Image 1 (cartoon, rainbow, N blue to C red):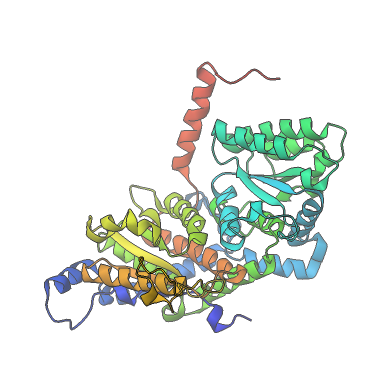
Image 2: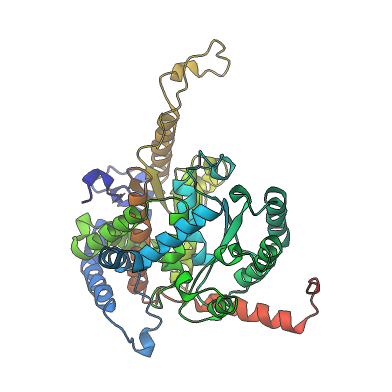
Length: 494
C-alpha cells in the first residue's frame, strides 16, 4: 500500500494569475502571462471526458483505421505484469525477465545495452537516477555483483563505439575469468532501426572474436528484446538463440511508452533494482489517474495546466527544470516523449531540459529576461539519498563561508530553488513544482507513468494522436535511400 509521503505531487498554484493583487507593473505582467483560474475550472469537464475516452481506448482490441496507431497497452501494463507474475511466477514475462537478468549477472561483469530512442532512454533514466554516478568504476564487491553498464547503439558515432571496443579489448582478455567477460542486451522492436542494427552487427563480430563460435558463452552473452516478428528476431533465430531467451515487446506498446516492458525491466533487473517496486509505483499512478478527481490527480493537473499555458497563454516552450543531476536523463527521456507524441500537425510544445543550479549559469539569463514563451516546471527531490555534506567551520575564511557553517548542500539547493522561483515570480515567469519525496524505484515508477499518461491526455486535448511518430520515419527513409545511392566509405567486410 502506498504511503502518503511516497506520493509525488504537482503544485501548480504558483502559476495561476493572482486575484485581488494590488496593481503594480509586475502584477500587470502576471495577469497577462499567468493562467486564469477560471480557464482551468472551465477545462475540468473536458479533462474528465478525455480521461473517460482514454479509459475506453484501453479496451479496444481492433481500432478503426482513423484511430491507429493506438498503443495504449502501457496504461494497464504495470499492474497486469505484477498480476501475471503472481499467477505464473517463473513462466510470466516478469519471471523470465528476472531469470535472464540473474543469469547474465552470474556470467558477465560488463553489459552493453544497445538501443535508441524509447529502447534506450528509459533504461538510461533508471540507471542514472538509481545507481551510483560512479557505478562502473566501483570494484565488483562494492557493486553488489551488478555488472558494469555501457550504453551504445543510440547513435552512429564511429569514434564512440571504437572507444568502447578499445575498453573491452584492454580489460577483457581471458573469457575464463568472470570479471573479464562481457555480454550485450540488444533492444529494438522491429530490428530495422539502422543505428542499433549497425551497432549490433559490429558487437556480434566482437563477441565472436572474443569467445569463439563454439564457446557456449557466446549465445548466453546475447539477450534480445524485440517484437513478435521482425529482422532482429529472425537474426537471433538464425544465430541459434532460442525463443525462450528472447523477450517480447508487446504489440500495443510504442517505443517511448515501453519503459515498463522488458525494454526497461530487463536493464533495471540487470542493474539490481527493485523491479516490483518500480511497477507498483507505476500501477499506483494509473489508479490515481483513473479514479481520483482533478484536485488529487497529478496527471490531469499536469496535462491540463500545461495545455492551457501552451494554447491560451502563448507558452509553447516547456522547460523541465530538474534540481538533481541524477534526473537529467529523465529530462531527456521526457524530451523524446513530449516531442514525438505531440509535435504533429504544426502543433506541440517544445521541450527543454535544464538542470539546477548548473544551468542557472547558462540558460538562467534567458529564462529570467528572455522571450516570454516559456512555462517552467521544477522537478524537486525533497530528501537526498545521502547525509548532508555540511559547510562547516574552517580556520581560513577567505571564502567567507563560515557564516553558513551550520548549513549543508541540501540547504543551499533549497535556497536556490526558492530564490529562483521568487525571481521568476517577480518578473512574471510562470513556474510550478513537481515534487518527489525521494528518488526510489517506487517514486520513479510513479513519475514515469504520470508523465506518459499526462502526455496522452494532452494529445487528446489538442486533437492529435499521441501515438506513432510519422515525422521520424522520414529521416529513416532518406538515410537508407542515400546509403544505397552513394559510394560507401566503410571498410570492406572482413
